[in-house]
Image (cartoon, rainbow over all chains, first blue to last red; front, side, top):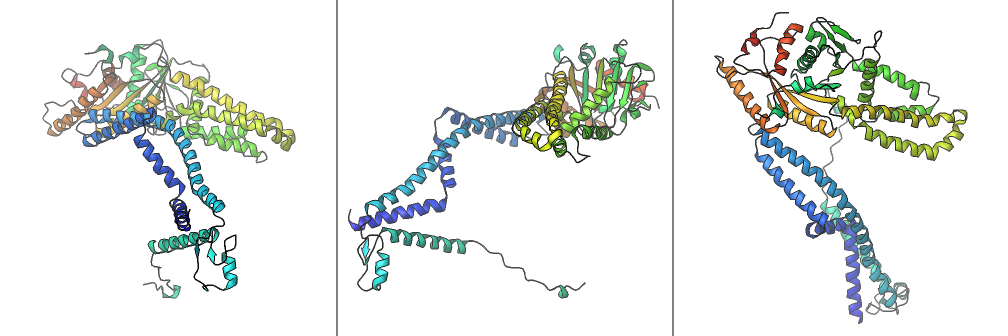
Length: 198
Length: 344
């Protein structure tokens, strides 16, 4: 691959890795699980979906029925709702076993897809210079440090590029987080002597 | 009219094998009046059998209902020798129990930490307080002083707080606890034996103690879940909140597998066409809920009792009132009873 493609692909991989890290594994797992619940054709999950829809239906009906005026109807809907909730609970418990299995494999898959490409790249392109500095940008010893592992002097290799990009992303994350969180105005401290009895 | 669900408690009075009758309901709906009435009708219908009416309400309501002083020991009702009443204060019973338990499960001495730990564990099982106080009550019934009277049926006037029957959930909890204790004593027993030296042999006692309790509670529950031996009569009034509480009570009892087939609705006005407009309006409201109940509780005996002009106190008045638990009240022919009660 030509150097520019290597650089581009590498950058994308690192950005993707950081994105997964920032979003967090649990969020991703939860998202995939919700999709699975919604679209799966598994028998238990279909049953769960139907039960939930029915339960919501009964709930709406009950909310629209006046308990005082139509006590019998309201109570019958109430009984049905309780019964459906109990059924939902048992089916949910069974389905959660599936959820645990999916979470496990998903976690594994995410870990592999985020770490493996980078290691492959590091191995395959360890001698690949990504780009060269214009001449005399850095003094000679710095150029040697920057090119440390095995790339020719005066260029940047994968190791430092990864370091650089990761640091850049975390700094960006820090800035965004700092400016997006609201800080309460501090309460002024009152001296005890100033607290007069009136 | 479906014979299965006649509006009367006749089936309970005629039920030969019933040993335990619970009467309960939330709010001042007339539990004590109803339980006293049921007991009186049972005693009148079966003069050869002995009945015991127990109240665990600390407010001594049975003494008020019969206008006669009752106490911790069963006393016959004056004028109805085959019915006795007993008023137990559950809190003092529980204190005695805790003292007894401390001697078996320890804690006071402080020299055996395991025993106090067991005391803590058993104290925190949900329903254990109710179970202990209940078993004390049962023991008390069984061990009356001189004559060792055996009662054919015991009627319980359950306290207003309603959780008296929570211990019916106890067997499954106890089973889990017993399993855990066995597991723990299996793992740590040998080590504890070494640590405690001579006292080590007592560590096995905990499992056997809990097993003992479990056996007792299982036996009690077996009886309470048998519809031939036990039944629960719900008491309510014809108003929304009381009905809602009754529904919840019935659902809870069904989850305990206890038989419920009768609901007594008290304080009904039956004032279709009276001169009191307020009575007419209130009766319309009550009728509205009564109709709903007829639809909701088709398979239950719904007994409708009238609101009388006075409190129903004293044996004679209770006799007059309790008649209508068996023969349904008819406002046209039986209207005289409203003002018929004797001043006590």
